[in-house]
Length: 434
Ligand code: LLP
Image (cartoon, rainbow, N blue to C red):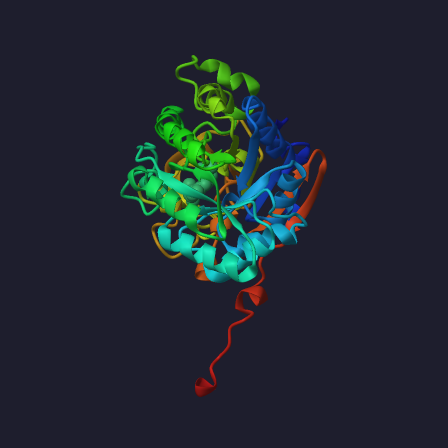
């Protein structure tokens, strides 16, 4: 469920006409719905209400300060993966005391910053990292809480680039050697063994792999609990969202079309299956969802530059490109593209929707059927709230898009479009070329 729908013929985010936002701030622009984010957090918390739950929003999905502040106000912690992300949380006026620090390559400086700011725990990916955390904590006279990331060797059945729980991924420690790693961790003077972590992949659309992984790891957690005073078990993120029928999935009755067995993964199903497996542990349960919380809460607005009629196909050339929304070119992923002004009297057209960047990979959709639109008209890319802006780049010296947050009938520009001056600030011509 989300808050993007047509009011009459105009696509709105909550009570705000998206054409008004595009008129004021230009395109391409990301627009986020605060009500959708709030609903997503509440729904997930409710579906796991039987557990002592801490949601740590995986901010790599969308780390705009305004979005972070909203999550902090809703009581989530954060799943952090860099010193930059820690600084962003602080800049948003929040703290990292309920947050966890993950990632395979934590530097000394990042570990120091996380400890100084009182991070709840480190999610450790290797033995040398454990030694480094112990060393930095000792230098600062602090104790670091840790969980080791277990690789449960489960096939998440998702895109190869975003599956993480197979033994040939770079992530985590195999279960077979984890007991030993925990034994070694417990002996380190500045480390406190506090939890167990796992994460099997992203954009999972069925509950099966989650069930399989939890069932595999729970006995290990129970065993460890007898040896160490554990506080928590983190089951990672990865809950998938609806991309294919994104607009319709905003309506409450869309879900009724499916029988229970065929229904796309919902937080209710996730909770109903996992809660009974986790409850007997009596531990705090951490979740690190990114995409589920923000994915359907954002759209990217873009304007049509040209309709280029080719010999055997049409190209809809828009002002957004692969640098603004990288997912289609990187993962061949699908985003529904809809007109901001709907006109049902117009015929449909079939076109490749492409950006202006000089490579063929700059293509959002091939042979897509959509309402005929022409130069100057607006389209919206749905389900673009997660891994949209955060993966944007300056390729082709394009400034990154603007970002707007909507709540009810209120909206604000929360991130101005990146100017050319901002792009080249920090660059210089070396003396030997002057
Ligand atoms: N926890 C860990 C340890 C992760 O590596 C990730 C995502 C998450 C949590 C959050 O996963 P989520 O709930 O958002 O699925 N750029 C890709 C997705 C990369 C995901 C990386 N790790 C995309 O656009 O699909």
